[in-house]
Image 1 (cartoon, rainbow, N blue to C red):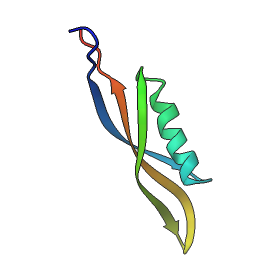
Image 2 (cartoon, rainbow, N blue to C red; image 1 turned 120 degrees about the vertical axis):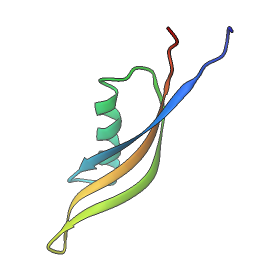
Image 3 (cartoon, rainbow, N blue to C red; image 1 turned 90 degrees about the vertical axis):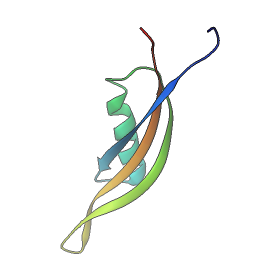
Image 4 (cartoon, rainbow, N blue to C red; image 1 turned 60 degrees about the vertical axis):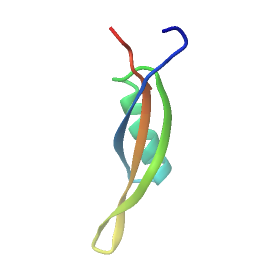
Length: 71
């Protein structure tokens, strides 16, 4: 059917020592090397890894949609 599309949504977790934004960017940019036609990324959760009372990493969970290609 012309003009219709289907999108798949997956969850990713990006990690960064700098920021939540950098963690989200890492997740999307790394995934874009394997998956084509990424469309939307939505941050669904952010947390931090803590060691000895110090933040050592930022983690961002991202839902990403990409266009499903029919064979």
